[in-house]
Structure formats: C-alpha cells, structure tokens
Image (cartoon, rainbow, N blue to C red; front, top):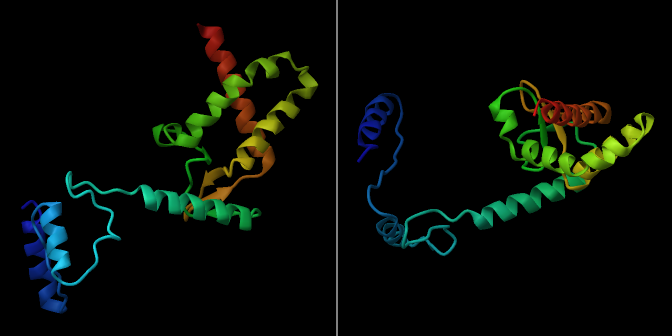
Length: 177
C-alpha cells in the first residue's frame, strides 16, 4: 500500500498530457505470480522464490559476469568503461571507493606480497609492483579513474603508482603501531 499515493499522483499528472496505461498490483509474490499466469505469461523464466517472495538474481549475475569476461577478452585495449566490475580497482577518495570490492581485494593481495617487496632491492621493487598490476589485469580487472560520463582505464604507470602507494601505506600503518 506504500505505492498507492505515488500511483495516484502519477495517474493524475500523466493523464492530463498523455495516455499511459499501467496497472499496479499489491500483494505477495505468490499472488503476483498467479496474477501473471492468468495472462498466459510463463513464470518459469522469472527469478522468484515463491515461498519467501525474494528475488533470485544468481543466474543473472552469472550471465553478467560471463558477458563482462567475454567483453574484457574481446576488447582488451578498451579505454572507457560504463560500469566497473568487482575485479576493478577504482581511483579516488572517499568511502565509496574504499568500499569497492576490487579496492578491498588488492590491498589484501598486496599484503600477501609484502614480504617479497620488502626483501627486494630498491631498484627492483618496480618488478614486484608490475607483477601485481599484471595479476589484476589477468583476473579481468582494470584500473579505472572516474570521468564525467563513466570510467577511464588508466595507464600502467598510474596503476603501478597506486600499487606502490598501497605498499607505502601499509608500511606507514605498521610503523604507527
């Protein structure tokens, strides 16, 4: 019933200028599925769990992951991305960037490689950083920077600088403990 006021406002506002027909349905998921079946629509393609009424998106998520992987392999030199995936590392400040799945995974991976990085001579540390950047790219991840219309893929030098900054941040955090 929480949509009834919105439905009424839309009906009043839109009926003046246009003729749009839509039908709002209030009830449980089980009732809704039976309602849809009454119009001859097959419900086996709908992703509902009728007992709980929740939506099952697992098949859709698998499809999107497979499609994104195919796109990344088909267009490896891509320069712009509409929506970042969970494998991507995002450049930026703030909790929305820090809480992104890719930005959480990479520092954990870097922490695992930290002993190797610390043992490496100063002139060869870029090799360890380069291996981490290549590992992220091999796992279908990209290093992305926000643009006004989407996300731009940054070059390897900027990605290496970001990985090096994570190493330096980890060193600083351990020094403060």
